[in-house]
Length: 141
Image 1 (cartoon, helix red, strand yellow):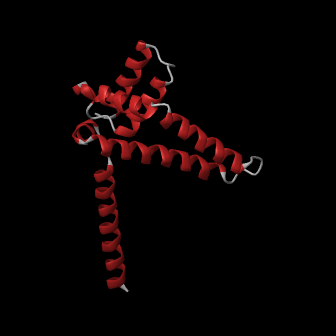
Image 2 (cartoon, rainbow, N blue to C red; image 1 turned 120 degrees about the horizontal axis):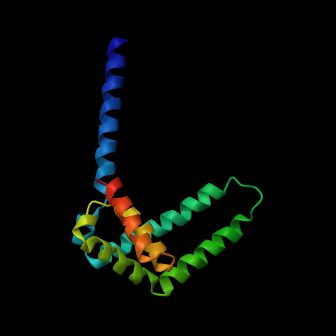
Image 3 (tube, helix red, strand yellow; image 1 turned 90 degrees about the vertical axis):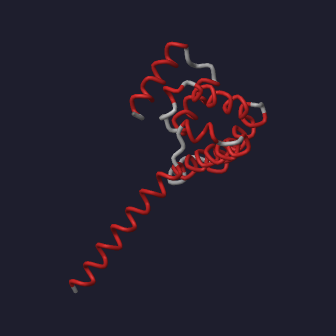
């Protein structure tokens, strides 16, 4: 029984450690982002946006009072509109611009993507942009 407990604890430690290393490998900051070629950046963004869209659908699936197909169709059309209107290139440019400032290299890409999406919508003054970036820098020190 003791041996079985020891093996269980050892396997748990190994799995937790491997999960932590695997998660770290997928985190992309400014240094890693700038090292990517353009096709890799496009695929990363496409995966991020599709994952966000699917995450919303999963979150909404348990709500009975909404039409799930209507939400799915709306999400698909918004995704297509975003990509089709050249916004993907604008988002790529915005992420690159953020990371050109060496102070921002430690900020994780998912945070910069949300910043870029908000900025592209035109809802942020220069002052709000700086406050947001300062907050992200502080969070990622």
